Image 1: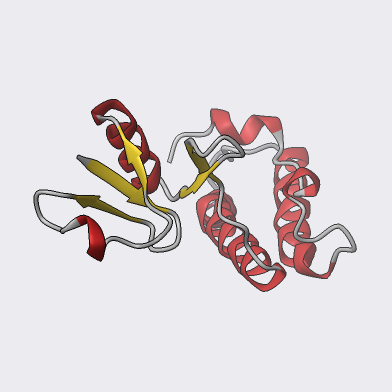
Image 2: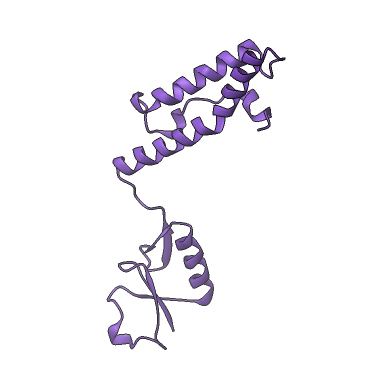
Length: 143
């Protein structure tokens, strides 16, 4: 028989563990539930049981420091992702060759990058719904 334990976030099989050695909160799971729970666990979900004692998956609860840290990581990655556009435009200016971006696009890019830098100081930080909006034309650019 296969079991899961919300307290240990582990799986137990009575072929390997005598029933008396299992955590007190184990719940028997079917093979299908085991695969579902394992897949969810590998995706970062936490195992729990619902009011009926059935196994379920929940999103982990992150504290404010973790959420802010993850949002700063996103912000840093986003700056890195668009930085090449700024560098290419500057190089084209210095080489006096045709520009890939219009003056308006370049201005929008610089504004977007500044908004990203200022994002952690925003009163809406770290709410993802209030992230600085990326200019629509950026997705059309090929690195």
